[in-house]
Length: 63
Picture 1 (tube, rainbow, N blue to C red):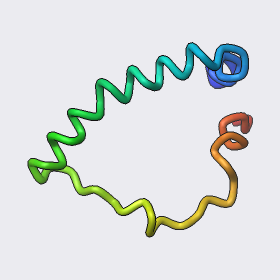
Picture 2 (tube, one colour):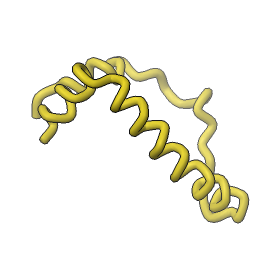
Picture 3 (tube, rainbow, N blue to C red):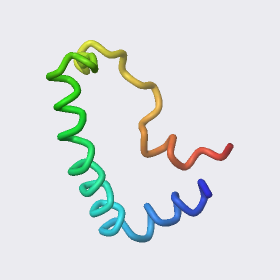
Picture 4 (cartoon, rainbow, N blue to C red):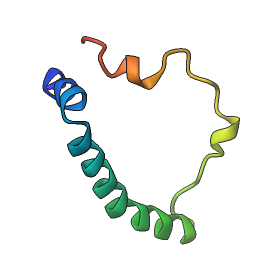
């Protein structure tokens, strides 16, 4: 399945981008609502350690 996702990301970027935007549209208001209600804690992304491997390279890593 991982290889199918990698192939789709490499060959169908517009479709993947549309999917990601749809997922964000669905989850963003839910996360905002739960955060405002105090049910979720938001971590300051500026204070997180820098990753040594870019996400784009990690996504094609074989398992």
